[in-house]
Amino acid sequence: MNILVVGGGGREHALIAALAAAPSRPTIVCAPGNPGIAEIATCKPIAADDIDALSDLARSMGADLVVIGPEAPLMLGLADRLRAAGIPVCGPDAAAARLEGSKAFTKDFCDRHAIPTAAYATFTDPHAARAHIRDRHARSGGAPIVVKADGLAAGKGVVVAATEAEALAAVDAAMVDGAFGDAGATVVIEEFMTGREVSVFALCDGNDAIMLATAHDYKRVGDGDTGANTGGMGSVSPTPRLTPALEERVMAEVIRPTVAGMKADGAPFVGVLYAGLMLTPEGPKLVEYNVRFGDPECQVLMPRLQSDAATLLRAAATGSLGTVRPEWRREAAVCVVMASRGYPGAYARGTRIAGLDAATAMPGVTIFHAGTATAPDGALIAAGGRVLGITALGDSVAAARDRAYAAVSAIDWPEGFYRTDIAQPDDPPPG
Image (cartoon, rainbow, N blue to C red; front, side, top):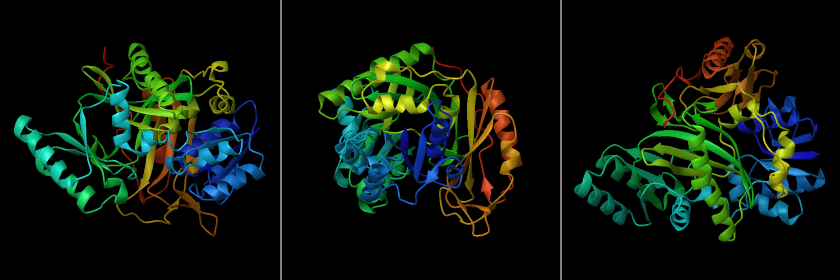
């Protein structure tokens, strides 16, 4: 099987590692890839948003499957282009990708199909948005309240405002100052939900869905969930926050109605559906949808996968999910992200990283490259904000956490930083 994987981050490295270990032994090409991916697959220097060049590459290599990692090429219609050429794709068409590309679309979709989520209002006029916030404040205190840019904003378009003033400032930043470009021209204002967050991943073929695995991640940059939101500073799978009963509720109340609703609306969903959920006192509620594997959640899912990854993903792409059943290792997995100092703000590029051989020699440890590059002299250097995902398997979350941090301590990168509290015990699973 010839497989093209689109993307070049830690998520794609984890996907390719799973594909390379599959019993079916596929031939794997990645565009654009990174130095870690280049050790196990052929990399082509084609940007993930170069739809024309990626389509040409898939045809020229006779791809039996294309797996699209990032959200941007999905929004741009890469899956549409490939399906029109008869190439199986694990990833939704542009119409279905609106579940991630537009928060307003998703909220309206949930409203139509009775999928539990936070109460909301959508605005295209900043004056009306401000008036809504002030009215809420006058009636019920108004805060905390959540202000979301409608479109993709690189993980920075969501503000959980603790005060009315913060909420008004968030509206102005998005709608008046243009902090997120066109993505902030529309905002969604939501009620604040209390509870614990979890991530559920399902594989869909347009008609059916099967649960893959659960996880939770750590969005804030600092220990104790402090500081700015990031793309994710660590992750755990399976999450201890979900019971089997809650998993079935999520499938019955969120995932399956979404697949049925998208099909009924004329935009069948094919690929990985990633539900970010809040476990509220009333039950699981949708926070947001992503239409691909999460990052860094993929880095803890793929090491736990026992099934043939290529067979699973192709079954979704070809409408044959009923023929497969994913199986998972009993071990837990923990990923600790190492990032460039300054992230998610300004950070230096080109700093040198050493010690990876010693870290990966530790039992159960894998290092996934995200923002890395190779210097002219062959040294590994940082080329992004989130740079490495140090992942470890263990008989328990605690054992996996200890292994991951032992590996982190072996890496020599003075210009990097990481959270020290990933996978620390929190509350027990809700009943």
